Image (cartoon, rainbow over all chains, first blue to last red; front, top):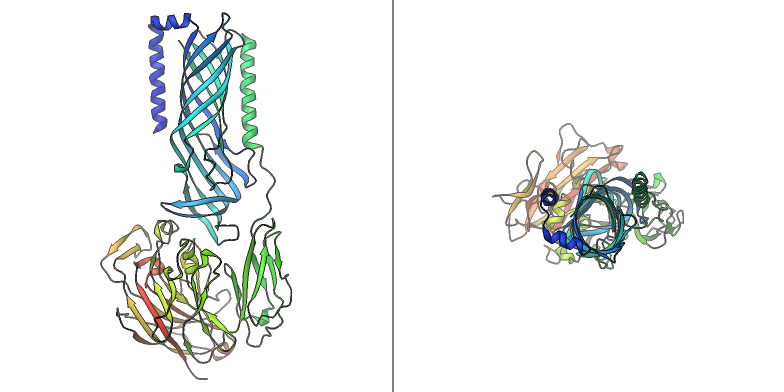
Length: 258
Length: 382
């Protein structure tokens, strides 16, 4: 559903910008003269929430699908000096970060949850993880024009989680209740158990952005942006999953320059 | 112009390369094993009457009546890389239970196993008193439930089994009295067994066990969450021809009867309330052991082809006072007892009590309570 909303916004902005191309008003023209530029970017990103390095509990990754992650950014840049080589930009990003992975793990600490009840322990077997998070992000970027058409940008970002899902299921293995010597609960023959940590996800996050864009036409650029989270998807006091998972996403898209 | 797009491709290429490196390349060396299980136990076959079953933290070995328990050297296989003390093959005196400690490969985890070698040969009339052995493993908060046992003779005891071990997973922090099976001081004479059908909450439902009937039986318990019915391994060696099962019971049905499995065996999510009373179950099954069939389980305890005779209380009643039951074993059609096999210990007896008759199918009323005391298994004189 969230993806559909973002897609709708995206289409809206594209049509708006097409419209805007026809009747750019004086305010924008004036802003441009003073070294301001405004861009609306739309893109798709892929990546994942990954522990770095991969913890030893993970024995193999059976499948990985980044899903469809939309990104929508409105960016205002103030170019500095007469040459306008350097600029500083900020704005607002609405983005999805999601993925689905299937991994084989050994003695991976987790909790099977249902309502208030939970069974924690060490899982050996298959784990399917589904993450789908929507963030509103404020970037703060330094921009540098390598050429008239090609620019790079970098800087920190600050994200707030609007809506997030972190769930999945375990199957084809066994849970040792509480600790590795606890009772062995075998999940064989397609029997599985679900887990859901959606309510434990970190709300505020920060990280770094590294991007580049190439102006293909007067008003249109292609861009790419790497977003590297410095914080795990879960707060530090969340001990259920023993390792940190950092969001690392790479976006490609089109940017409309006013 | 062309150069610039080349640059762009290069940068994109580098990005993709770095991403794939992060996500795919770094499966690290496997960590040392953390588990510390006894996987198998080996005792000379001629000393054993039944194949030992490795339960969560204990192994009960049913020994031949002539076996010398004072010097036994069981051999073990354990989790890869783990170590065991005393060492596999060490000669020990098993007149009393021995405790073995298994240490995991990474050295961080230990698991203690109690190994009991018992001789369960009884007189032809056996009286079950229901003694309380205490609380199993008081140090482990997961195992705070009562163990009820019988004295076979001066040295041998027989533990009753129950499903408490399975319930313990969902019952963190519960007192022994809150388990489905517990000991009560208020017996017909002395203490007795108290069986109560308990709810297992939403998590239990998720595991496919929305309720847990109190049960107590002769046999073993090895949790099987894929099929809860297969967790109860019914039956112990019995060398007499059983005639009657007698004893005293007191039963009250819980308030609301819920059906979680319909008559076709399909699961009913959330359960369906039926306007009926719960019933308890009291029965004993005498069966032959054959290759691969040393126990019956919840699926076949009343239907298996090896069954010779069954004594089953048909119409249980609700009462505030103790009621006597006196039930005859009925021979199955076409079955007879072979005296040679009887002498060689080729038959088992399973005595089963449950606070909900259909508790194995998760049909019953939470709160149904059955007290059981002074049970006698009366057999033919030889």
